[in-house]
Amino acid sequence: MLGISILTISACKELSIDTPISLAVEEFKTDPTVTQILPIIRETSGIAESKTNVGYLWVNEDSGTPASLSLVSKTSGQTLKKISITGATNRDWEDMCLSGSDIYIADIGDNKLRHKTYTIYSFPEPAANATTVSTFKTIKFTYSDGKHDAEAFLVDPKTKDIIIITKNDKQSAIYKLYYPYSLVNTNRATLVGKLDYTGVVSAALSPDRKEIIIKTYTDLKHYTCTYNQLLEVALSYPSKTLPYVLEPQGEAVTFANDNSGFYTMSEKGPSTVVNLYWYKRK
Image (tube, rainbow, N blue to C red; front, side, top):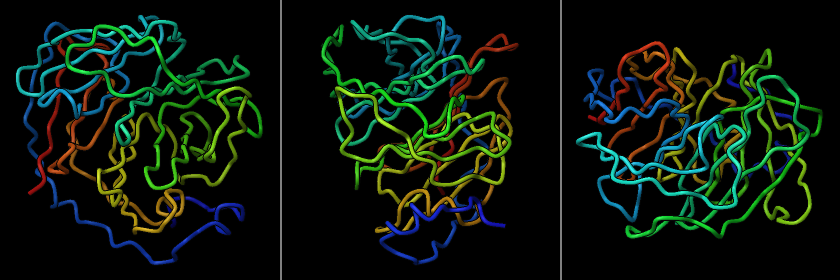
């Protein structure tokens, strides 16, 4: 069975029909390195490895927490600092990524389906000595067919299109914000496919754009992508399951900047600790 059914609007823009060759599960170690996060970050929903602060990860938290990012050491688990995003609102920040030199934060959670619009913030990655971010781009959007709860997204470095993947639909749906998107008017996210599973809570794109990880609470789905292939098309092929130590409420995943492996991290949930897991590529 294919990973998603691609809609006509997506297929007509496809640049390549090469079938990607999935890497085997054995590409990554099954026994991750575990680092305890201290002090505990309770509501982790997105992570991305920093490019300007070598050895650190950016961490965002979701609803009920300030509009800020934590900078956490990959080796010690200690928080170096928090940076406030002044003027932004954390209604329900559910995922983040670093594409090129810019951080993207997706305020796309909507558990009760009560919001009409959703927001993605974008700004250059803060310098090592920064304490606040006060200038950012605001990308507001609605879905083409109503309200959705989403916790995962990808930014395509090749096209700058933004892919949003819903969580609680019967089949997690894939929507696209086509670049260039308006920073003044509300954009429309177009349905471009559906996964054959549900419960997606995070997504990550490898630095070379050749691999995608889709995270649910119980699994990590692995896809590959050819150079000219649209991301939603890459997701239409069968996935393979990556090694994964079950987390209490794991909602974050990201590739390492040097593509040597990937990280996962969870909310505190019912656990007494929060850990960062590092799965090294063999």
